[in-house]
Length: 105
Image (cartoon, rainbow, N blue to C red; front, top):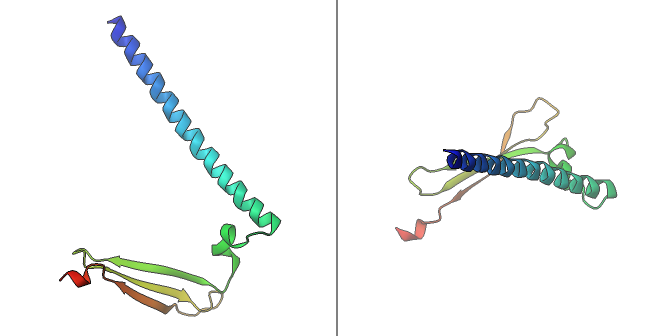
């Protein structure tokens, strides 16, 4: 009975140690990447990585994808606002279709 409790205690402490290491790694990785982007922006080397979505008030677009359930392909639409600061309706900027297996019919 004592051996079983001892093994249980060792596996619980190993699991706790593993989860703690993963948690510290996640926060450390996010901090290092954020510091990297902040340093690039601060030094003026790269201004688009850290603030791409917030940088230009006149560029607000997103891509909408539809993956076909039968696996025949993917359809995509780029929808954007020509003047996001105004009251304009969104417009269709571009659309595309990708059929990877079209030649295998």
